[in-house]
Image 1: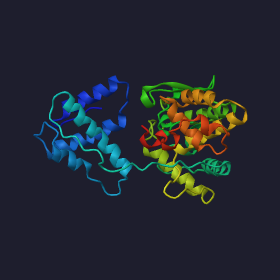
Image 2 (image 1 turned 180 degrees about the vertical axis):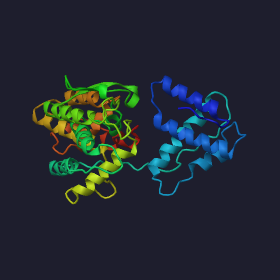
Image 3 (image 1 turned 90 degrees about the vertical axis):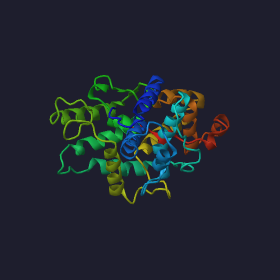
Image 4 (image 1 turned 60 degrees about the vertical axis):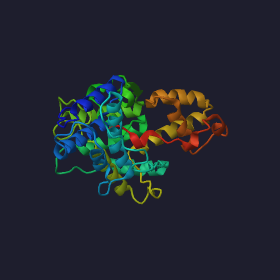
Length: 324
């Protein structure tokens, strides 16, 4: 991403180079830094150091902004200041405690009945007059989220060549932490994706995305979220959300993992073996993220609590900082 124009541009570029060298995509943070740079170039055009006024203007809560979104917006600017200080540049570091405590999300645990209602809604989704073939895409995309445990951004950014319909494999590239991984389609899902590919290819024969928009490009970050809420409305009142924790597309990933855990435990597999498998399958950088799902699983094996990390109660899934 280019276009930095403020007096902080060289420092921002330096931070980005450092993050990329560490193997971090840093995509969302880079977008926030670009917006911060735009504010600085407009409001502080001659400023080459990160002042308190610049930082504190940036932290001001926006109308209807959630504290988690505010935190994600502030964090890269705080990191920029720390980076500048480390290389001897003058910078005001936003103090800890701003904007406040993060609100941790309690995932919605779908029942089988709720999942059936959601996918029934997906199968009857109607086209829109705005173009695109969402009636073909939505049933497949959301089944891949659930059946493969994909992050929404991973599904949205799939390339056609990443999905090997001959061998039933899906390559997830440059995901969280710059890690690639491969997941595998069940025979039913493989055939379902073959039918989808044939249908969508008649509209976009030379497409690059597996899920192309009306122009043949990748969908925006917000589109799957909008689709998901449309499906929830269509499935209502069969899906009941917990207060303050409305279901999100990411919760289909949680549902997948919990289903794998419950099936594995009932089959007599050891939790350690399940964790090792799931960490690779989900693209987790450490097993602590994976142990959390044992806390969410509805059908606990009697020994799971004792085996899992003692700090499991204070851990939360990576959904609140998912990169898109």
